[in-house]
Image: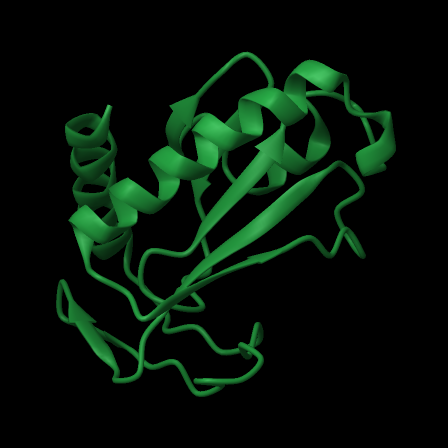
Length: 145
């Protein structure tokens, strides 16, 4: 496990794992259903990933999109590969919504819609809310696999 996976809560936030990738529920829910798609390797540049990781990426992103639509239909989806603070290859996966979404007693606005998402905006979730959201996302992933 690399440090980026650990920062985003692996294994407690895990939704799907494959040979080269982990899909995690993003602890800060910038938008409802925000995920992190993280490479399992120590690679700190896309060019350092093995070719098999790119092949597998197609199936992983397909399952992400099917699962998120099953969980809550979104208007758009953004994959953002920043790697500014966390060095290992990873994407922030943000389902985007034209209107604020309610889930588990919390409201999730998308203040950047339809433009650039605001990565500093996220509702404060309680541990029970975070657990309920993780369970709902996990159910959607299981149903899509």
